[in-house]
Length: 170
Image 1 (cartoon, rainbow, N blue to C red):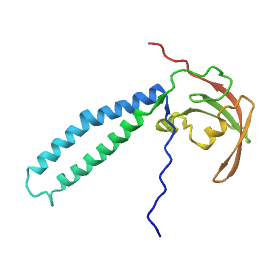
Image 2: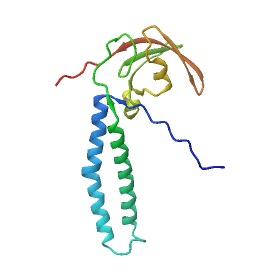
Image 3: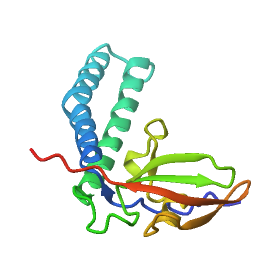
Image 4: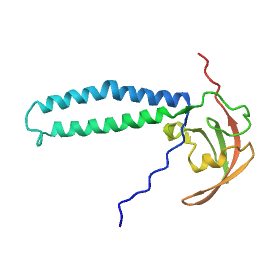
């Protein structure tokens, strides 16, 4: 048995302005607030002497590695990010940023927004554009039907409504 794992395919580079702002705020918090605090704690733990049996030192170093890994990820992600700040010209079709209302075979209506993979949030009903449902819905119109494969079999949906949020002009 091999330990090789196929690299994960990177998510789409698209984001809403709110998603980009959230990632920039996280990066700023990590770099300007959390990392200096952990660095100070590691310095204090190192001053206590033997580092090999110093749990605070070992844990602090591990925390610094995790923070640095996340900072690298966020910087790379933000560097190539495409921020979609305005709705498409054709608002009768489903594109990135759309609020979509679908109905399944049982007549249950569900509404969600198609966003970038960094903004995925089930509580706010945000669905990644890389998800099977969002990919199947792209470019569809009201009354179009889509069928997707899910672990329990196939599921059919009918597009009931499409809407876009108006951009906030500052």
